[in-house]
Image 1 (tube, rainbow, N blue to C red):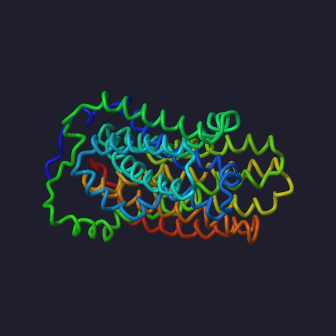
Image 2: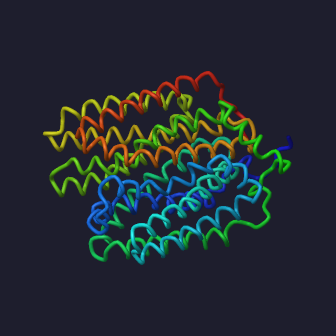
Length: 402
């Protein structure tokens, strides 16, 4: 295969990388805006904890169904066109949600938002990797891995103010303005017909299904995505439900803002460790071990809120390390750009699987068993993710992944 040479073989286009990161933040807010308004949604729609929890995660349904096919199809459409179109669709859906339609129509909007989320999480990281010099690739992929945590931190800080003073409709309208603004900036900043924004391999149309099947059978595709899956099973739920276990209202507000920041710090830490200290597989193993240890400690600290918050912060910091390690693993293990794009499609699919099943599962376990239910689920996911991280050590890193 002929690899396209570009100036980014020796330097990183940091401005474009940051704008693409902002695109990821804007679509992650599709989860965050419903997470911070969870109690308000419960009161407004009166649909119960499980259905309201599903409203948070239903954005992931489209990625769950079409993730791998998106990794193949988006490359054929062109990453720039897919990215900007997805952002525009997300903006329209947010404006419709701002009208506060009935619950059924709101859920339809949330499902359609899934197309927006999927297009961005497939196209943006592939473009970031291509715009990054090899010596910066783990750093930029670690940066990309923070987009979920940054979205929750920004939404927790600014969105909470909008929610308290102006209501849910204004929160959703503000998100529509933000995601639409990012789309406009990228439309004018990203060059048209740039080969870096297109798929660099030729694929016969009737081989798409065969290509999708190959993605599932390739451990270099499957392992990073599966490691990421068990992180996503926990992440949205931890940010949503852990603060609700704290009785003090002020402390709850502080921890709701701090937990996403801890996740961001963990992702940056994992990217740095993966670039300079150890293989990303080893970072993932360490991170899952720390999450499990912190979860066990939480069981004994419910009656001491300050220590509970500290340990919860360590747990979410470690969760952030998982996503940084998984994202760094993708360009490290991929053998060519096409394989890397396919892995991001699989990451989108399995990540959305985790984001879809996580919140309702944690809501149910919390209602049945309290804190012990939450801890039990965390331990199950950590064991699964840790075992897959150990398995991924069998595969050598590819020093020339692009």
